[in-house]
Length: 356
Image (cartoon, rainbow, N blue to C red):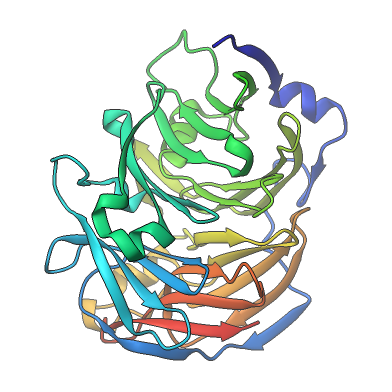
């Protein structure tokens, strides 16, 4: 397949009048127009395994995590929380997953597991899985570039990947490269990082927070620590809409890893999106020093809030709950309804539902 390659750089786009939410390189915590208390309705029973992600597909809730039976996806009724099906075994055999269930994209009715280290994965239609079980799964392969730290399918048959080149590669083509390839083989790139220090940039984009608009026209990226939020229009190419420096990622890098500095403020955890809004699991108050000082049993829960932004990065509302929120997703049919994986103060995990 012939590939057409188009490229843009951060420096060029910045020179054309990029909006920066906080202005220049300065960080400023988001100021929300509205603040609300948030209550959740717990649906179903306590989850007796560690869930990584929740997604909605039709009338079903999909929770990804390794169960006691070594299944990696469990399907629940969206209204009642009743468990209906579980499958896709943990392992290295055919149609099994060793880590892909932690890196899942759901595009309409199709679930994709991504085993980034092996350039492969598996996929299945949710409706077929509910009637056929694991026989509905197919093995996938994809050309994942070296140093790829994120990969996902998009609506319309596009694929997106983030290549996070090592800071030890002085001849790398870019510090960071965001790429999209469509069905025709046309490939577009966005080169550059908003973090000038190469080692720090590498650390912050090894596990980025990512959310797509359901129509596939926009994508949001945030750093693994702190909150440096980038919003892109990807409807035809890759165009940076806004760069928002909310919470400085105060980390100390060493040998490709990092530790939090004492005055580090916890920022985003997970993100999801509708066509109009971005929803982020957010802390914004707790510091690394506070977590270190407290005993394990007395540590306050982190990430109890849902922060809402528009697609230019403007803070809209913050919702404060009494649970740690581990994963969220809006209902595609009613985006104000949010489903979540919740943890209480004793570490018990549940599925919750709320309306924003």
